[in-house]
Amino acid sequence: MAKAKFERRKPHVNIGTIGHVDHGKTTLTSALT
Image (cartoon, rainbow, N blue to C red):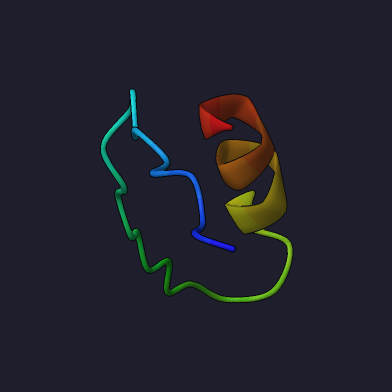
């Protein structure tokens, strides 16, 4: 059985965050997704 081709409508974006504890990294990531 052949797999159906999946068309991606949105581009993949990888973002890395670096910061000290309690500087809003999780809040920023939540706002972006």
